[in-house]
Length: 230
Image (cartoon, rainbow, N blue to C red):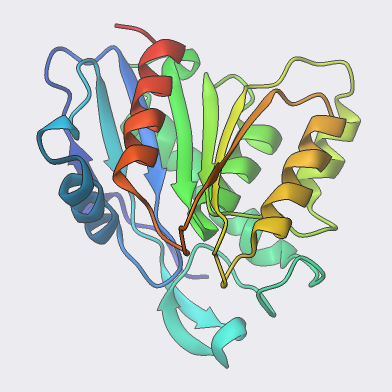
């Protein structure tokens, strides 16, 4: 099974002594370095948070069924890019185990999980929701950008099994012109999460494709600062 490597963990260091941490998971075909560069390009000197290190792991290279089995940096396999497809339980279980271990060993070794936020873009946003609502419900929160969950997602099953529990809040952004992950997929994911008592803040980005925008990241960074203040 393809493995994630801590040796390629990119970091935007906190401006001061870190008391919190953010894990940012890239989209399919990208890398931790690529996601870090994108964030730094959009935010410039605002990329570094005052009190939280931002970690950018890289997904393993594996065969990706959604593009004919080509080898890509992807967190897990998808048979096709649609919410109707069945989740690939084997690759999802494997990567969640690996990222949980990475977070506990590298990210949260000196930081309480209650001061950790997990998020990501596209496939990385989907994995962030799996990690937060299935495995690491102690974390402070989750953000998902241009992401969706499959209709049969094990995230919904996990939430149902813990009905009445208090879950970390979710911040979800989605472009209204996203053609790869249409807005309606994000809306459906959000509504299902709300039905399972997840506190979701959902924001639609006007005239936005499958991409990240400066204002979007500025607002995410502001949300992080409010959720885990220095």
